[in-house]
Image (cartoon, rainbow, N blue to C red):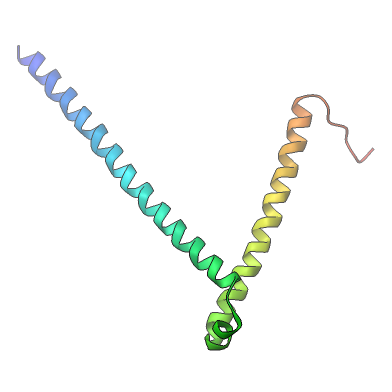
Length: 102
């Protein structure tokens, strides 16, 4: 009987842990989504600001805007390169790849 109680206690503790862990992961995911949404909102505001806003911001803010613009271009270039690389890898796996260096 003691062994069964121990097993039940262990199973209950594990089930509680799994549920608590899942709940924590949900909270963390929600926070990351909120951070991402705020970043996207800021990003859009910085890209589509009007002239009045441009005149009222400081030089440090202008540098930040420029940094985000440059970073966005780098991200786009990286993503394009990754897509091209994945396409080449897929062709190679399917046997359709012809090296361009020959």
